Length: 588
Image (cartoon, rainbow, N blue to C red; front, top):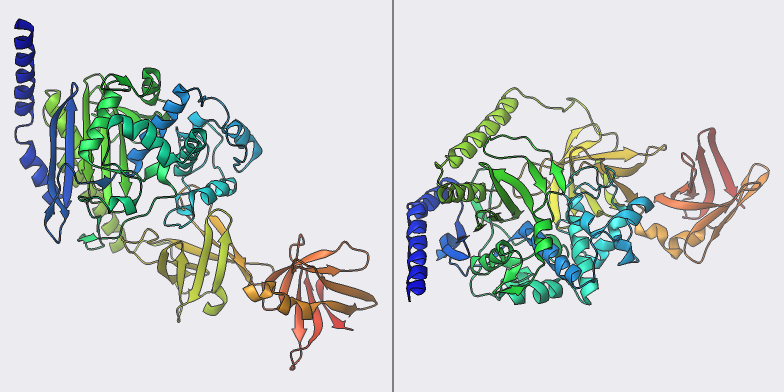
């Protein structure tokens, strides 16, 4: 009886103390939601295995005034990454995976940009952002390609660093980690996560797709600020193909169970889900993240396996944020103090995740509450003032008085990159174009020379993106370059010939023999609809379609031919364009 009474007293003291520590927290949250124009949030706090707070604030649906509750589901974006690592950890526990074994020993068709990288990269490399690949996010963002196709395109993504030499956040590698988990478990990544994590932990309201999210009785809508700082409802971002990197949807009731399992060193209700050694590895620094330390309370930052590791006011902090169109989330833990926090919000890019979590830690650590909101507000105001000052001074890299080197219509066409896919360019009249890339549609206005720029629009991920058109030796527009990521090579999209130039009906009339001085040039059409030109004394050349009736000689830079027709449409000549001169061959 005395033992039972002691336990009850301890629990009473715990909750009394927690209530005291959270005094005024609700009003603080409501005030900050208003200040930062965030429609709604759900917050959960767990301490010593007990849920101290679990509550919804604000609105999940602004127009209909539907409140956020503890059951409101939100996309958690990159918080998903730790689920992918946790699933791999279960497979490692089962003996199906070794973190140090090269990936291609599990996936024989796995290919990266070069053989050395392909041969050496391991599952641990996939989940620690040290593959050597930069983000390459625009290769998948808003793409409708399935996961298998994105996986096959990995071989066309160029690295910018050597493996294991630099931290570079990369979603493709986490997608690959999830793809691997699916293959090793005999199904899909979704099935593996559900079987090994969600079901054992009791996360019954957690889903993987927006379609399934919308089937739930309670879910949040996505919101974003426009150029006028007004909050607008936007469409949901589909992340199905890149699921392992960020497609999970959940609520605080489910997420607090997941955090509790991690704080309990991989156990849920005394059942071992993960080995404690793997949980510790997830929390152990693997790569240093080089970032400016703006605030003295925050320590140096490292990446573990699906978690970021740092310190807050001298206490070890393990966390991962998530951000996607319309949503921002955070899972944060202090393992030594046995504190866990879940924060889900429905406005992307907002700093409330950090403001709320730091405030909670201040309270539970018994420290003075730092005015994080003011700090972030001041920093944002300073950044905006710097930008406004640059505008007032008219600072620009634009060269005035320049013109495009071609007519606007000559830029129109389709351009392709083997990993990034297709870009379609249309004439919009005047000196403007229209660009379609994946599901993005935007105007392109002339900037200078052959450079065009998309307009400012916070609701479009391609805002203020520059596109440069490139010409070949003959002055034909042959490709376009887009700067997709600072500090990384521009992505070059090669121009795709008009579809008619690959049709047999178009190519057949070009085949034949042509007199070039005393020599006879033969042009033949292969069964695969490729023209081959034979010149006496030389190896045959494949003719690569360019535009109209013009072709480049494969493997011969600066060499091209163009077939000429008379007024009746009959092919009469073929013109040769080459560095040492131009020639005409008459058809026999």
